[in-house]
Length: 52
Image 1 (cartoon, rainbow, N blue to C red):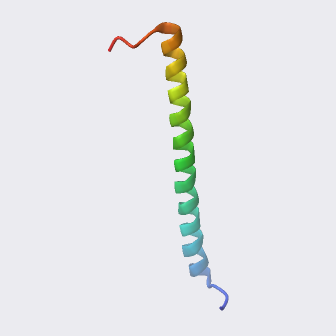
Image 2: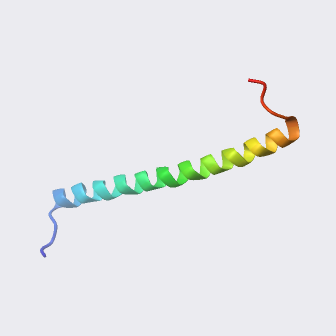
């Protein structure tokens, strides 16, 4: 396997950066969803059900 050219490095580096951002978005989305569920339970326990 040879050395990658400059344009190949940019291409594969961009793919790696996009993959990391997708992974980070999935992790943060799961964390926010979990925190939101806990917060909703706490607020319902303290203030009762939502009137909507």
